[in-house]
Length: 524
Image 1 (cartoon, rainbow, N blue to C red):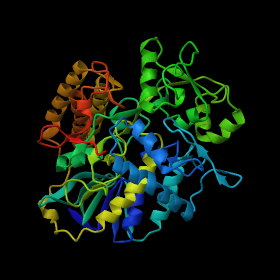
Image 2 (cartoon, helix red, strand yellow):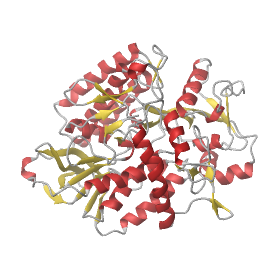
Image 3 (cartoon, rainbow, N blue to C red):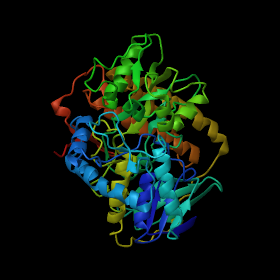
């Protein structure tokens, strides 16, 4: 196999990966591995914005408090303190570099979203912030000669030598070839896993690859039971769940049931601006009580000119579906959106495996708790992407690795239909039994079914498509097992058989290969 050496290998080209690459390039040569085009990522799809306490009446302490409340007592306070304080510096970096945020009379406009008590959401292009900031960073990164992109390339296995991560076994789709990328530090920025569900707001690449890689290598995973379902995703027959940003409700949109009644006003003091877990569950209950598969988002009472300008992307996308955001009732239902847990790291992105780091959605830094506060995710990418790169730069050169010691992955085009079939099968299991609302019976059934799929493909996982099936099943199984263990309802994890929060579960779940599930305390 071909073997290439860099100082840093970064897996993923979303905002966290680009930020990490930008800062790592000051210390050596960087390889960015991305399994699609460099512009395909969850970051690119993010509409809402970036939260930071820049307002005249706002302070990091207020942002901290909102994050802790949304996280339902499962956020690690020191991680959140870093996020809200260093986040101001990272946002100032973007402004100094020339990133254009929406302004009025020269002043940056700050929006409001669910769970926030102050206007602190930076946005660009109205509702295209993720695309704008990721594209901005991508343009900076591609100009750096020390950075090399490997597009349409998937990381199949982390290279572990002497209990250290020394690089990645990769597979290039275009030439169907395996090769090794070795490095003194490897940074995972692979994004989330929401595409393991039937309905998801994420791009098709978000299948939990990084979680599977880390698990197989022996990394610790934390809080895998917590998956956030975005309350407002477009719900039309035979169409993907197009995201309708939290910011739409931040500007005053109402949620209506099939009778045309607002239902959030009696459920939470913030009504439609309650934290996402509260709103998603409320919509789920409305759907249970009706014969309808959706509720409605209404902006009819708002200024149409302001709405068209603020949400131009959403407005134009809905027009393609013959829906007018300003005039029509928009059918919506929750869809899988964000993974709160992930690969456990310290405050500098370090995992329990030496030389292996993680940042962005794949990482569990302690910031998100049981429920992510809206628009904290892009800020986390900025803050912890830099921290991971700085810490990784301190690693000394690693041992040499010989390509002769590794067997290439094979590619059998005839297995593609099997991959699609099993992917759909897994998504049905997860959506029906490990979705917004869970119970013991469904979770136990899901665990058994997913274990069977894992066992069926474990022995033949050296073929590319088979390895994908194996990974999808393994990641889904980890979510189901941790959800079965957590016998309470907290944040994004709702058990209809254990409806209250329990003090004994005021801990992080920890999963590691060949070990039983354990716990660690929340850092207060």
